[in-house]
Length: 231
Image 1: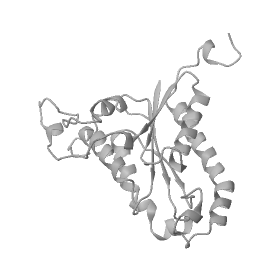
Image 2: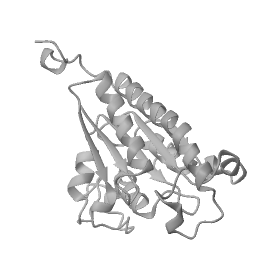
Image 3: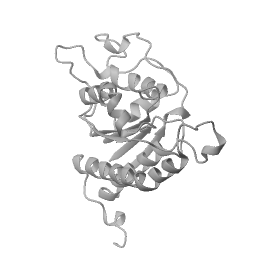
Image 4: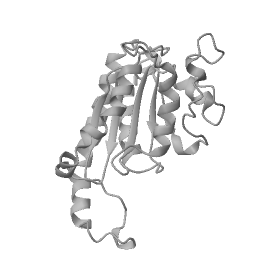
């Protein structure tokens, strides 16, 4: 069994990546033998869908797969065979990051069939989850209607793979040291208090998402070698 966490943030060691790592730990808690891997999308050189429609051409060489060749060609094939996928992104300008959107276009669009009911020809219908981190508070998130603005991603993930679990992590710290940046609209004290009290709870929920994903995938029982203390 192989599970992926797709990190849509350019930061490899901050809020989004931390939550994704917790989710992968949750998977390992249920399936010690499972292989888990985090993908940092900003490590790859690629662009989004170019509307060539080769993936929709009946009997075409690229029907059902992206025809564009670049830095994620092999990665797209790898992700399509996952047993579960957790996608994480900070919210930039009320949406997921541009780099992540480009990857999702290339990953999911080829599997969407323009049938009356928008059917999917994805190789595997795997359990999925979405994790969002944002500077906005819960109140601002509600006022700005983020759940609706971000719902398109969940809609397409559900259409292609499965209905995703969704975790919103609000009012996150943006910097380790606020004094180094022009950010006087925020209280460093309140931000750090939030990180100390709320962020561990968000990490715990991400861990539980991973556990539920592994349970949903019905992973095989671990081998004796995979259980600590058992021979």
